[in-house]
Length: 97
Image (cartoon, rainbow, N blue to C red; front, side):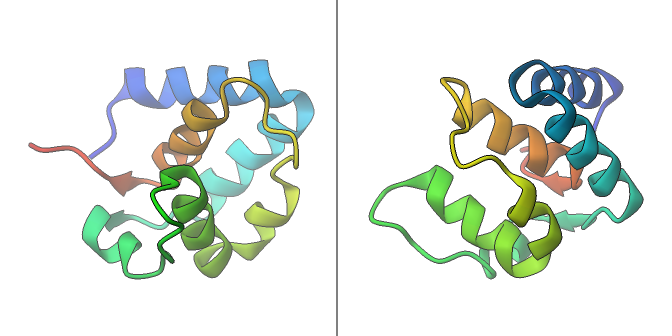
C-alpha cells in the first residue's frame, strides 16, 4: 500500500497548493481512510468522458462527501497531483506491486 515517502509528498503537495484546506483534508483522510484497492474505488466513480480527475472526484464524493465538499473549486495548476494526493491519503491502492 502506501509508503512513507508517498504520504509525506502527498501531505506537502496538499498543504502547498491548498493551504489550510489541504491540511484539513489530510487530517480528515487520516482519521477515516478508505483502505481499498483501486478496482473497489473505481466502482464508486462515474466516467466523465475521459476526464480522470473528474471521475476520481465522483468517487471521493460518493465515499467521502465531507472531504469532497471542502476541496476547493479552483484546485490550481496542480489539480491532478492534488486529487492523486487525496487518494493516497485515503489509502486507495493504485500500485502495481
